[in-house]
Length: 298
Figure 1: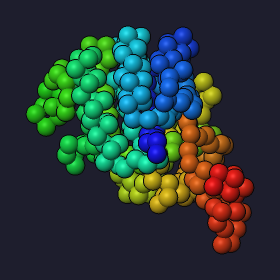
Figure 2 (figure 1 turned 90 degrees about the horizontal axis):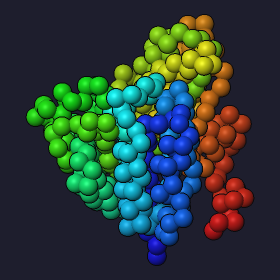
Figure 3 (figure 1 turned 135 degrees about the vertical axis):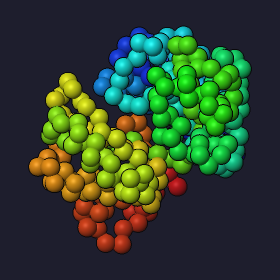
Figure 4 (figure 1 turned 30 degrees about the horizontal axis):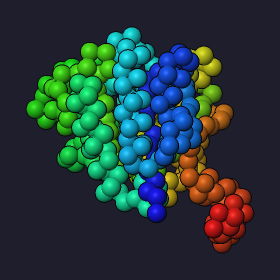
């Protein structure tokens, strides 16, 4: 049986289409690798790639794309609304089929080791691959961002897991890990006041006492004149999308602000949307077996 792993690398370039195509090209036309999606955001200045494949071909494609990103992205010139610490900001591996979390973790460590040796790139391991509990949370690892990383990696407690104890001069630092499927879910607000978006994000995210499997920050969407609560839902089966959506609506009312839309970045499991549809429709005793596509794929 084929082993299938998903990888969702985030690269710090969302504006230059030529650079984005160069970064994505290593995932095209490769045996054992399938490019599913890539989604760029100019405000975040970031592209999120979703690819699946067998472990070895996938590893080779990811390493090639990392090399291209180091060549074309200069973090000293990078500006964007999304937190970031490197040209290849984060590389998570997710078990999909006939693969355990342990195997995904081992692949993450192999990629981290080879990338650090090949490109002179300092790399942190995070989530399930983390070398210590203090490094599991990506937000904690990335705190300080690119501008603060040169000083951070000099601290003994923040020595990179692989690579030099100096940041790459133009590519910064990378985090590589293994995790459950994550849903990147953003909710837009009809206010240009970033302080309000930040306050709402603070109340929604788990780190500040909010929803258990929710990470959230406020984002300024300057071109549209609005703001956004940008979230990573780290386990949609335990904290559903509708729970975060409804909580944001409730918190927004405190400030006289309305939700004007939402967006999904990249791909997500069908069950994440089904749960939300069932909630809003009030469907009783619904089963995934009632979905036509589920029965067809059996």
